[in-house]
Length: 130
Image (cartoon, rainbow, N blue to C red):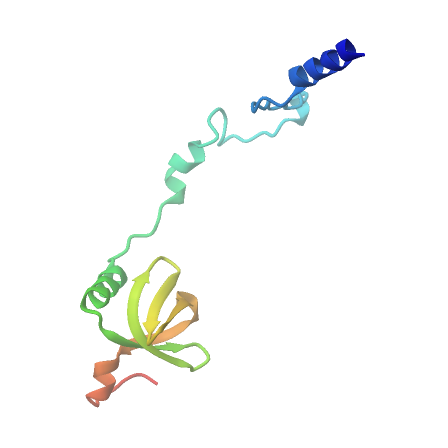
């Protein structure tokens, strides 16, 4: 009985998962395979093609945001629905602006921003778009 239990334990150890996995791909007949003329051998060749170029940019938006972040400028952000949020821009990326408004931090999608301006410009009585 003891020998049978040790034999079962040894087989269980031999069949235990050792951390490596095998990728199993079915073999498809040539007629069922995907045919792309652009992606013949290398699946990343489409990334190197000239058809997917990014339009040129003056980088004015990046320069403006960098300047406001470095100077800790108090900004007023007017959203599409007319709501105004005052705060200092902490950081930004391609899609989002993060404002520090008092003790709270607010992330705003750029698509939701109607316009923004320096709060000091509005206080000085300069004309601001409405």
